[in-house]
Length: 139
Image: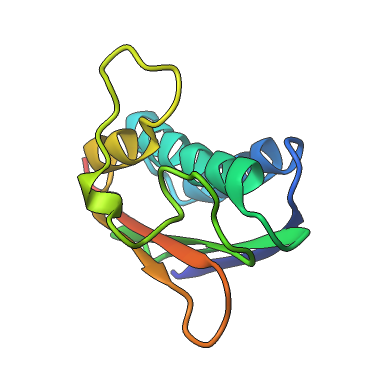
């Protein structure tokens, strides 16, 4: 079975828990273990928080998720130009390293630690960026 979610959300703090809970309910329905669901929720929360805090333009963002029983593929797409962001600024994003006890700037490190296939790219022909990550659903 394949489950596909596509959501267009307002760029506000209330939208992140909504998308996390929606994706988690879908994963739970597919029988995915709680530890894997928690990893995906953490990465999704970091990506959403970055868009909400840092995208300079656009009042909305998109989340697309595809689950096929073996893998979960998530994209968080912002519609703006990132300003001072640790995730949504593709140019040089891999070089960003936050101090271990820093309050901000650890989003990429957390997403790398809890997912697979993490990449951040510019949107083609539009402002904004795409945060893409994947996670195996097997224990």
